[in-house]
Image (cartoon, rainbow, N blue to C red; front, side, top):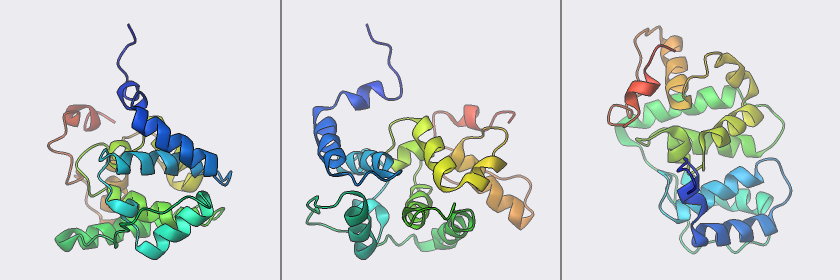
Length: 194
């Protein structure tokens, strides 16, 4: 019997595999194609915290799709950028942090900064909120698109915790917890002795 892993149940979904295959057949061959395809497939299946269009404004989502999956038919419902209400300042701070540390190698880094900041508003592990299929996908995304920020994560903290810690360090706050983590089943693992 196959052991249950963080990807085994997700990878078995025929619908997921079919859409993923279609997206990858249209992929432009750019470094972030695979990770974006995973996010799109998960979002389409309701398996992420991201709204339609990965949380991007319609024009940004169209540009992302045209660059990474040219010729792929866009879904009829393109979302507008989400409104985070009281958490809008938090989202702005996360976006500024990510934008500061972009690698500067690809236009999709800006879209990914927007997407990651949006997923941070979710209540699960960041890789799950993004709709990625395993934590290693998120580490790959961060290393490729935000390498200097990744280099600061010397203790291999969980990514959401790490990003919020960076914000707290900037503000001079030394006891810091990301606000959406308290209900997570892995809370004790994330807030252990890193």
